[in-house]
Length: 102
Image 1 (spheres, rainbow, N blue to C red):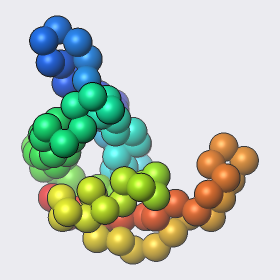
Image 2: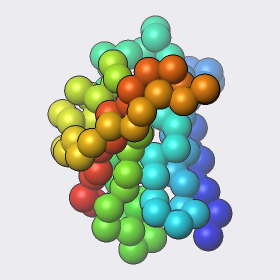
Image 3: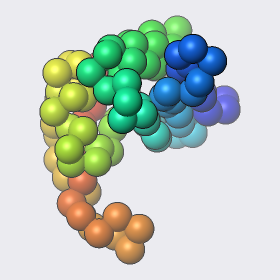
Image 4: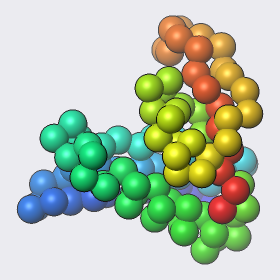
């Protein structure tokens, strides 16, 4: 299977996207919402779409390695914190690991 990439547009402009990696363990690889539309439900819509897409493909659990400030959003959306990933060269901070049962 290939990855799933979904883009959100508002008035013809890209305002967010997510990438769901399907190689091996399903993982929310990337999720981004533009600053000017945060708080308007774009992230929640993208997240629900990702969960529905995972379910449609027969996936029952999606792993999320989060940027620390985003972990609360994922938890509000139903994800459960299960651990942390230590810093790396590319990400010099500890990142929360969450799982979402879909």
